[in-house]
Length: 165
Image 1 (cartoon, rainbow, N blue to C red):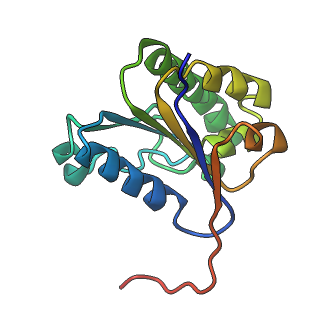
Image 2: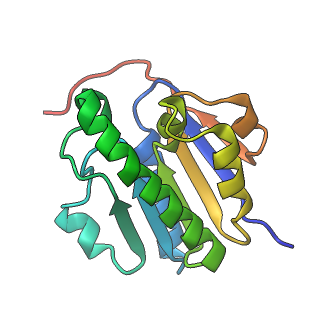
Image 3: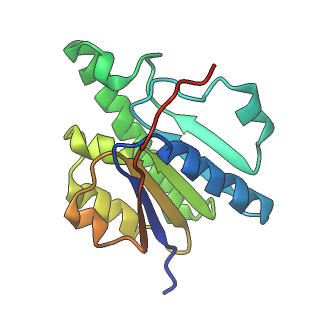
């Protein structure tokens, strides 16, 4: 059985999500269907007119209800969002098992793992559902159990940072 590839963008530098987005645009330009599920970023890019213009080739999903990043939420709100995040993970599994896209980006899923919302075993089971779909995982901290499954791992490091004006 053919398997899609697994790509990981990790590290404490800025640019992991933009790198994944670049791959999404590249895949869409090749006629492929792309789905992006964002985690831990509140609404992220969800309300962007630009993202809506990329549909139907690139579809963006986020399941969290809060506008704020997960880390800045109160403990009570984090608990509420954990259920939403798990719904997003279940949606990802559905997408993979039905082959709804050629490329699935799980943006900040390594942060979901780092926060203990899912286990490495749960993520491994999800990745095994991929059939022909390629997957990009992003996040700061990479665990060995996931690293060994990847076809390509890119470590993003910020050498110098200046805020855009």
